[in-house]
Length: 110
Length: 113
Image: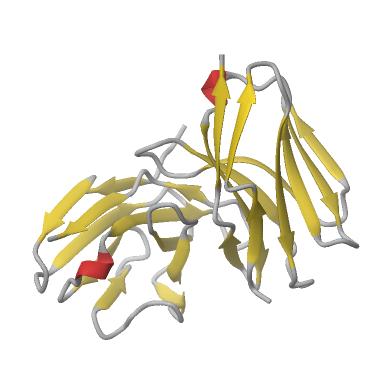
């Protein structure tokens, strides 16, 4: 019930394409859903986040779509660039504790 | 932009030795977290502090791990004795309050030989 399931495990996208990463959760007590970006040898950096009373949030090329009834949320990266190549983690907060997905390794090819 | 500072960046030690990690959170952040990240996985919370008090250490292997934040600012995580399975990245994060976004440091990469 505390798990956050993330897919796909890895993703290859051509430059300019759309990258889509999906996450699903079970616990309806989760109240905050951030996405983190992690480059090799670095800590995760907060990218964008959403609360369950909003269905979509957009910041630049990054958009979170949130489906409360399906208990799913996804990250869309528009116009993907080689510099976006990194590992992306979704997370969900419940009882003031963040539960992370297993991560998606994104490679954007020029 | 203020950052979470961690040291050392890398640590290589032998099994059964003691090892310690240090974290200095962003100034003014009351909540501090220690996570363990195994290669290819997401971070998992080990311990959470609110000021100098532990509020969640349910996932901390207390027979060998200890954590402290004596003055409510910087924090130390210790492992004694280290085991082969402890090899991982140890990440520190902080947030202004418990319901605010968490900001991570760049971690300590621990390798146990």
